Image (cartoon, rainbow, N blue to C red; front, side):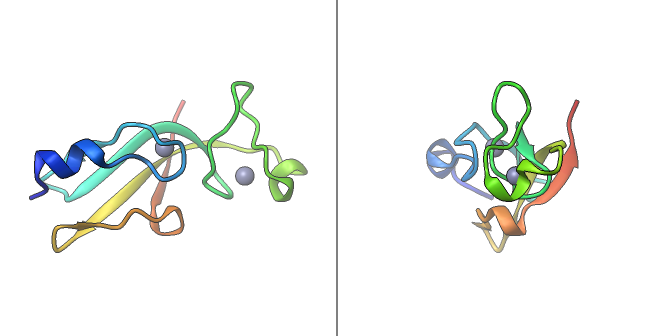
Length: 85
Ligand SMILES: [Zn+2]
Ligand SMILES: [Zn+2]
């Protein structure tokens, strides 16, 4: 379990958005729109601003951070990506 105090200060390391906590699955999910390639937040037009991704159209994905032994793994590289509309 993660304490509500900790939950309150946790935010998505990519977009600083709010996270949804699923205690059963031990997951913290950000439903924001992130680049499918680098994981950084997309701009309002749905484009990634980093140079590496500029050549390839970015897909919007949400990020799912797992919790291991009550420690949330807040790393963009470690997050599972899932498609968002
Ligand atoms: Zn996010
Ligand atoms: Zn990108």
